[in-house]
Image (cartoon, rainbow over all chains, first blue to last red; front, side, top):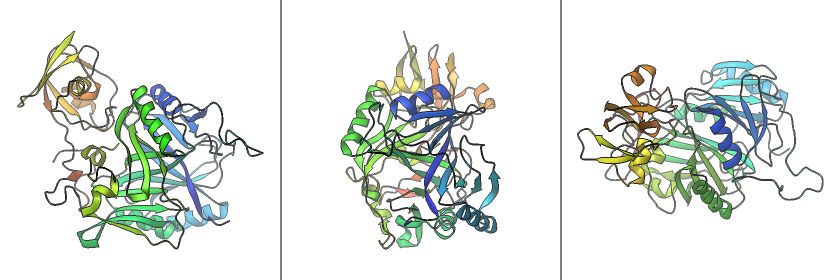
Length: 310
Length: 124
């Protein structure tokens, strides 16, 4: 197996203000499939091409935002090894084991908080219920897709203060690689880190902001630029709140559009990017080029994009 | 039916249709004055205080407007529905504490941690 250790983002647990409105958004507009509800009232969803039982969990709450992000690891041995390393690190706090079955059809999870205040989880097992097209002589896509119909939940961008501490955990304990970064003060200060556990342009990204535990967006992958443009049509047709786009990022080269769920949590759908291999040098953007780094076409930032988070 | 919405210490005023939230009323008439964020009651950017008038609100994040503030007339404009003419004071800010404009580069990210750790505390 070429990708070892932490394999990929496995789930994101979101707080929403109105559960029914949110389920409608995530199933009809975004086009995820509901796979279950538990006795706490949480709703589990997955994208059509994902094999595991869920990748998004919605919980009704009195505030919006992200409860935690979960990462699938390759084995029980990796889970135990990383849990022990995190327990031993002063950078990981509030460490705890969450029992098997606390999430529907998911094995035990090791939860910890990184220095930017975000709760992260590792787990080795989640029931494989399969993608919509199956694995024996499959068709390329299923017939009953709704909305934007991304193939998978792909990554999150998170805001927090101690970027250096969190980057240290991901790079030096969890084994991620730094694919791209934004630096300021002539390179002395890193203000954004894009990191991959696989060979994507990013599996998670953090931007230094004077806050703790903030979600900028959760992102889902589409197949191509035309699907991003169709997502823009769906946003207007369904009167979803557009943030910005369609456009392209300089960072990661992704073709993108941003919008908000009914509670104000930002969603992205995107396509493109590149394959990252471990021998590829880290791409560095300087803060005087932050406009085209983030919005390649406009070449300037947008205050709401930078400032609005949940 | 429409209601007149005025913003204290500002020349901005606009009409808001019955059934529209105040932010929708402002945006669909191309007016300005209240900062615009997620428009879903989650981010707190459009926080206002109602100084005069009757209104109702829909669900908004308790991390942005707590119960005490609600009873003192604070609300998020995206979840604020007028039932009479309203006078408002703008409380929310955008682009002030989280990302600061600089004349040379256009934008400058905060470089020091710990300025606040509250939920969407957007005061300067």
